Image (cartoon, rainbow, N blue to C red; front, side):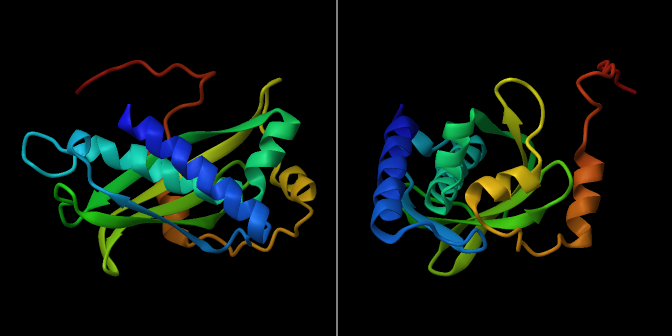
Length: 186
């Protein structure tokens, strides 16, 4: 439940910033300041590895709202889903420790957008997650990026993706939902 309150607070804060300052460029680094709470801690006394993804969602919500994407998604009946993600841990976040979730849109390919999230303490990266997400229509189907940028009234000025991101996406992909994917172990 504590992530729900953080989510509502993050959404409220981002909407206030959007109203006051207008939409930000999609290439900015978004920052959400947090503190490790007792409900984030596992039996080893540091932040649970599963909690990182939930808290990195806050950075994604903040970025989507402040860029104006959130409102366009709602108006058009579109929504974003995470297709894959991978997190790497470097240092542990301890109870009551302050940290910042930094989030940045890296770019896109023909189907997905790619974001990077980091847990940062005093400028030092503690954990990092790459996310591949897609924009879908509630009526079914993928939202083409050209249509998304047209609705945002912005040019597609995102940088090209680094080669390692394409490699990661290919290596982490599962079969299509239309293909069989039996659980077979060697």
